[in-house]
Length: 408
View 1 (spheres, rainbow, N blue to C red):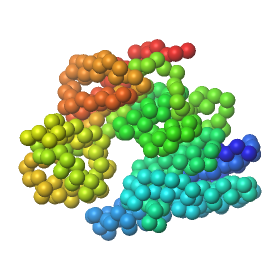
View 2 (view 1 turned 30 degrees about the vertical axis):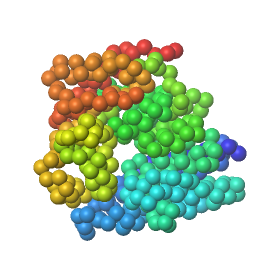
View 3 (view 1 turned 120 degrees about the vertical axis):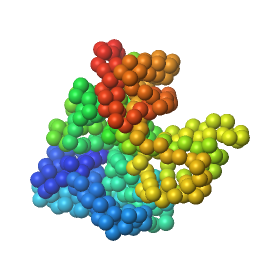
C-alpha cells in the first residue's frame, strides 16, 4: 500500500479528547488504503512548561540536559496516541526519534537531521501497523539525545516521508493552511492554495509560523508534496489546495508576485567595527546563529559587520553579551527594539520594483526603515518594533489586497 506521513501539532493532541479525534482520523486514513506513519508534537504547551521548569532550576540550563528534559514531551504524546488507536481496533506502535532512525549532528537544542535510517519503521509498516513517532527529536552520531528546535516535528515528518518514499506528507494543525500574513495581525489575510518550496522556506526564515524551513529542504530534495491542513478537515482529496495549502515545485502565480508578508518581532541587530571574522567566530563559540550577515570591505582597516539575530536563538543572552564585551569592548553593540518585515514571492527581486514600492509605502505612513536586505525570493525591512504590526498591515494592503493577477 502507498505510504503517507501525517504530523499532528501540539494543539491537535492537547488533551485526551483531541488525541482520540486524531486517532479516529488516522484510522480513516488507514481504511482508505494507506500505510500510515504519524509524527506527533508534545501536548499543548508542554514544551514551554518544561522549559519554564528548567529556568526555575537554572537561569542557564545545560543544553544537553535541556534536550533530555524537552524530549520527554513528545514521548508522552506518542504513547497516548498509540493507546488511543488500539482502543479503536487499530494496531499501533510508538517510537522515539532515535528508535525511528533520526540521526542528527552533535548540536543540542537546535540539531539538524543528517540522515534517516527508518528500518524499524519500515518493518512495522510492513506488518500493517500504524507507526507513531515522537517528533522534534533524534539521536546524534555520539548516541546523545538531541532536539531540533522550533518546528522540529515538521522536520521529523518530512524527513521521514522522504526516507520512506511516501506519497505525500500531511502537516495537520489548528489552522487550515498557510495564510498571506498572520490573521491575528492582518484581518484581511487570505489562505494560500499553493506555495513553492522556496517561498515556504523564505516565509519560515522570515518569522512566519508556517512549515519549518529545514523540513521544506527535505521535501524539495525529493519532490514530496506537503499538505498543510486543519486536523478537523477531511482527508486529502483530488484537490488538496481546496481546503489547505499544498507546497510543491510550482505555484499558480505570475513571477514577481508577492505571495505573503511575514514579520519577526524579537530580533537584535549586532553591529561591529571590529574584525568581522573574529566576530562570527565568537558567535559560533557561543552557539549563536545569525539570520543575515553583511560585511563591508572584508579584511580592510576598520571593516564593519552587521548581523541580524533572532532572540529565540539566544539561549543565554546575558552570557552572550558578556562574551562580546570581553572580546570587543565598545567595538560591538546589540541594538534592541527592531522588528523584521518581509515580502516573499518567487522572482520578486528580478528588479527592485518590490523594494521601491514597499519603501515608498512605508515612508508614506512615516514608518522609517533601519535597513533593507534582499534575496531571490524576499525583501526585508527593519522597522521599529512598536510599528511592526501597522507596517505588516500596510504592506499586505500594498502587495496582496490590490487584486494581483494570477495565472488561471
